[in-house]
Image (cartoon, rainbow, N blue to C red):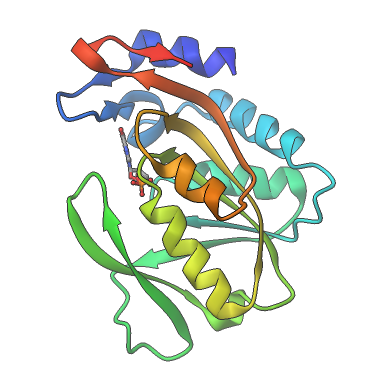
Length: 188
Ligand code: 5GP
C-alpha cells in the first residue's frame, strides 16, 4: 500500500535492533485518516471470506482492528495482556513480546470467542509471529477458525510469515519491509 510505504519512509525511524519506530503515526500519536485507509484496504482484501469477528491484542492492534470491524460490520475483541492464567472464563496463552523481550499471558474471555467464530486477526506488526501464534492457540482452544491475518507492517527479514504459512494461514500485510540494514528502509 503506497500511502503507508511513503509514510514509513518519511516518518519511520529504524532502531539498531531491527525495530521500526512508527510512534508518530501508529504506535503513540495516530493518524486517523491513514488508519482508516489501511482498515479499508484490509476490509477489501478479506471481503466475502465469511469473517464474523475481528481479534487483536492490546494495545497497538486495537485502533486498526476497531476500524476494520466497523467497516466489515462485525464485533472486535482484543486479547488482554497480563491476565492471570487462573482467571475464570479466560482462555489464555503465553506470548513472547518482541519489543519488551519478555513473556506475558494474553487472554480472551470464553464469552467472546466460540466455535461459531471465523476470525480475522489484525495487528500493527508481524515480526517473528509470536503474537499471531498466541492467537492461533487461543482460537484453537475456543474451537474458532482463523479465516486470515492482516498486518499493517510486516518485517520480511524475520520468520513470522513462514511460521504462519506453514500452518496454512492466509496473510495480508500492507507494507513488507525487506531490510532495515544500516538504518535504510527498503521494501519487498
Ligand atoms: P511478533 O509477535 O510477530 O514477533 O511481533 C509482533 C508484535 O511485536 C507486534 O504486536 C508489535 O507490537 C511488536 N513489534 C514487532 N516488531 C516491531 C517493530 O519493529 N516496531 C514496533 N513498533 N513494534 C514491533
